[in-house]
Structure formats: C-alpha cells, structure tokens
Amino acid sequence: MIGSLRGTLLSRSPDAELIVETAGVGYRVQATPRTATTAGEVGSQVFVHICHIVREDAQTLFGFSTLDERRTFEALIGAHGVGPALGLSILAVHHPDALRRAVAEDDVDMLCLVPGVGPKTAVRMLVELKSRLDLPEVEAPPGADGASPVTSAQDDARADVRSALDELGYGADEIKRVLSDLPADDDAGSLLREALRRLAGAA
Image (tube, rainbow, N blue to C red):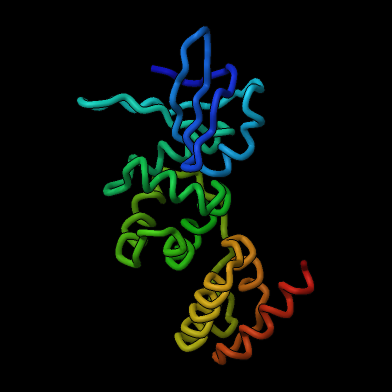
C-alpha cells in the first residue's frame, strides 16, 4: 500500500487531480482543492500523504497535504454511507479542526454546508464520527450552569442567518465564528445585520 509520494508535479487538473512522477512513474492522485492549490507549481517537487484504496475494479490514490487530513479522510470513509467522493467534499468545505468541532458540538448545520449532505445524513454522520475522531472538549450547553437556555426560536433564527451567510459566499469558519459571538435574539433580521456588521469589521 502506498502511504506517501514525493516527486515532481507533472500536472494539476481543474478537478484537483494531480499527477506526481516518482522514479519515472506518474501517479494520478485525487486531492481536495486546498491540497491541489498548495501543492506548488507544475514542475516543482511535491510531497503528499496518500490514502491508497483498492477495489475489485480499480486502485485510487487520494492525496493530502497533512497527515491530519489523511487520517480524517480515513475516519470519514469508515462511516456508513460516506464514500471517497463525499469524504473529499467534506474536507473541501471543512478543515479537520473545524470538522471535529462540529462533531463535538453536534452541529448539523455545519455538516449541511457540504454539497450533497442533508439533515438526515448529517445526523447519522455525527453519531458515527464521534467514535472515529479525536474530539476536542466543548463548553457546557447553555442552561447547564443555571443560565437561560437558548430557545427553539433563537435556534431557528440562527439557522436562517447561517443559511443567508452561506448564500452570500462566506466561508464555514467565518460563519461559525460570527454566530458564536452573536447575542441571544430570535429576530433573524437583526442577527443577520449584526453578523454582516461584524464580518465587515473583520475584513
């Protein structure tokens, strides 16, 4: 099994396929857009961590710029219903740290930012990935220490804001960060205006 490749980057296609030549052999490597972008210029030396998947009809190499990404990918494809294509899509949207945080916090909306992942799939993935990923500790949920819990109306408002920011082109990490700082409010319009003000100030 191939665990890594070091060689010359011969080509990079628009769909993030790399061809890495090692000892005169060009290996086709499927990668995330992040890995493909950071691989370097064509003709330069490149190193990628490899997940080598062998099936009856094909052998496919999946390349990652860090060992953490490769291990996270392997955890993802070990979950029921998550194939290599979906695993790459998840890592294209979420950095491993952000993914672990989403799983630790049962953040269905974060997983639903991935194209092709709906609420039911996201819930199933959360359950399976809890035992597959090394999750960070998270703060106690609102209300655990006597504070007022977040109401369902506030949850709905935040979900609306998350969707609006996603449609406006903001990244998952930006959305997550600004939502965590917003005040408790069930008015989606007010929350969206405040979120946009904070995002503009951070630009």
